[in-house]
Amino acid sequence: MPKISINGTELYYQIDGSAPGRNLVLVLANGIFQRTEAWEPLMPFLQGFTVLRYDMRGQGQSAVAEGAYTPELHADDLQMLLQALGIEDYHLLGLSNGGIVAQIHATRRPRGLQKLILLCTTPRVDPLIRAKVASWQRALEWGGTRVRLQIALPWIWGRAFLEAHPEIDSPAALDQMYVMSPTVEAQQNLMTGFLTLDDLRPQLGAIHAPTLVLSGEEDLLFPPHYSQEIADAIPRAVHRVLPRVGHVAALENPTLLMQEIKSFLEVTA
Image: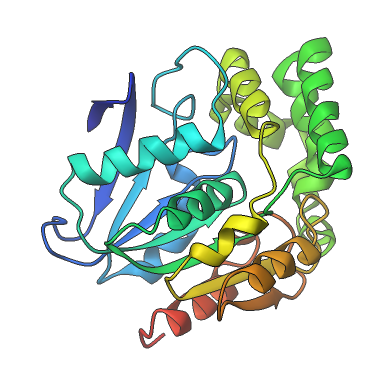
């Protein structure tokens, strides 16, 4: 399993398709508690792409480093990972917290970034988002990972998806999510770091890459108006809303999501 030591930690990564070299790579940046496996529903649609998936610090098979994992720190990790792997030209797709990291990365105007896709994310932590995440922190503190998962569930999944898949709220599904979750220490570091986020909107005008911003119509964690704020701040960015989709678009409707992604990347679906 490929791992690389960078920026004081060890990151797990996975490359599907041709070796990067000078190939154009699609880089996938995880949501806050995700791991590389969360992108599996999209992979059948990405035949012909060179895809880099990686676990951010504290996630999946990456190391659990000490301290708060701030968005800026994650962005430093991403930049160093791309450099270490020799990836020169790439598209970047970031989901949720990964979308925040992608915004920060893009404001640094990296030479190799060709196109940017921001999925179900936010440019800022306002009082409502802070209260949501604080409730997850208290749930983790008082009841551990299982209680945190139960508290987070209605904020994550869209109404249409939950109606079609009520088993998501079953003990078996909770057991599976528990197994895939980061350690308690990593969750604490991830949430503490997330809550340090400043308002990125004043910086987003520096992004020069063509940008697609996607939001879920039924996303209660980061409703579509946050994505519209991002699109308003990035020159020539386009915002599209995915109907009947919550926060976990890659799992809830991968076909619809990939139609939008492939259209934006100018690849025939």
